[in-house]
Structure formats: C-alpha cells, structure tokens
Length: 245
Image (tube, rainbow, N blue to C red; front, side, top):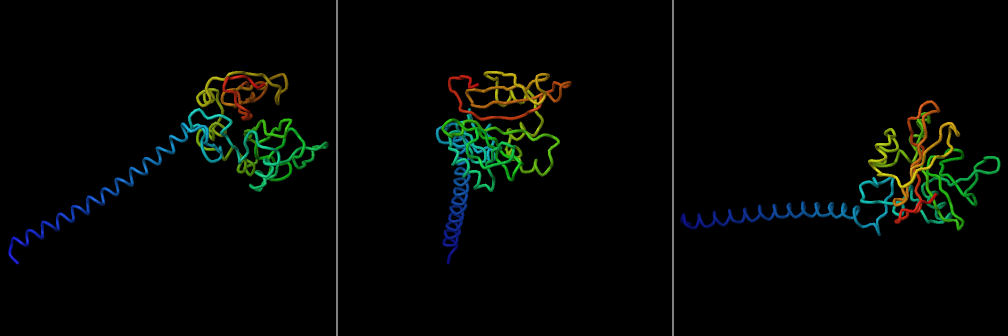
C-alpha cells in the first residue's frame, strides 16, 4: 500500500467520524428543540386554551394560566355545575365523605341539604364546602383557611395545604390586601358580613364577578382590625361583570 492510498483511507475515516459527530449533534439538537417546543406548547395551552383546559387547584397553580376563571377550576375533582350524585361519587373515589348536618348537628350523608362538607370522618371537615342549587347542581365551592390553632394532623390533610404555587402562598403564607390585589386584581364589589365577631367587627367579602371568585377576610379581633383570610369561594363567573350576591 503506497502513501497515497493511506492518505485517502485516513481522509475517508476522518470524514466518517465527522459525519457521525454531526449526526449525534443533530439528534441532540433535535431532541432539545422537541423538548423546548413541548414545554412551550404546554405553557401556551395554559395561557390560551380556555375552552378545553381544566385547572385542578391541588395539582397546578391557577395563576400560571392566563385569565383563569371558576368555570375551569376544580378542587379535589369538584367543579361548578356537577350534580349532587356526581359530587358524592367524586369525593368517595378519594376515600372521603360528603356530609350534611342533621337536626341535632349530627353528620349525615349529603342528600338534601343546601350545603355539604367534604370530610375524612364525622365532624372532621378538611375539604371544601359545596353549595347546591334548586336542581341539585353545584353552585358554589368554598375553601376555608386553616386557623393557626388547628391541630397539625388537620393542617396536614386540609385541602388548602395541597394548593400549588401562588395559591398555596395566598392561603398559607399570611394574608395581606397587597397580595390579594397582586393575584386577583381590583375587586368588582365589596360586602360587609356578620362574621365571628358579630356586628362589632364585621367580615369583608371581595367579589370578582368576571373571574367567579370571592375572598372573605375577618379582623383578627375586635381590637385588632388587621385582616385574616377566612375563605375563598368559586361561583359561576359573569363575563359581563354582574355581581352574583
């Protein structure tokens, strides 16, 4: 074999190695671009596809989605408009119970009350309260904040502790009006309600009609007007901004 043949073969080998490297780089770049496109598509879906998306608040931060409203939201599978039977089955699939109070405040299966609570056991409400309309459909879902004095075992299983992202911080990071305004914006209506302190220091409900959300806060005490979060409710939203209450 002369030196010319050796050079030709060496050149061919180098070219083959270069082709292999280019192919490997090409595949890696393609995989990276595919992953980037997939994540971008998922983000775009959260931001734009309001007609088809469902936001389970214990799995995703709703504030990661653009202009989310109550028609898209679920809490432990419960959503507005579902029937009493469907709500009961949804709760039972999670090993929970949907209960109502009897005449003597005993816990009974939810069969005819306007409001029922999601519980692990009798007198242990840890999930949302569900309000039903005249046709037995869910018209409101309310999540109460967990008070500071609650037993750690209750706090551990309460639905508010399962929220994600900024919604978790809203419920568990200490309430402030600044945070409410940052997350929800300016309210479309405000109501004074008789709460835990009676008429001496009333609760305040902030209504977001377009989003279909209301936020209720209460003074820490009669002497301390600093507001604390009481609850958040989902109700049928009004694109026109009509107040529901």
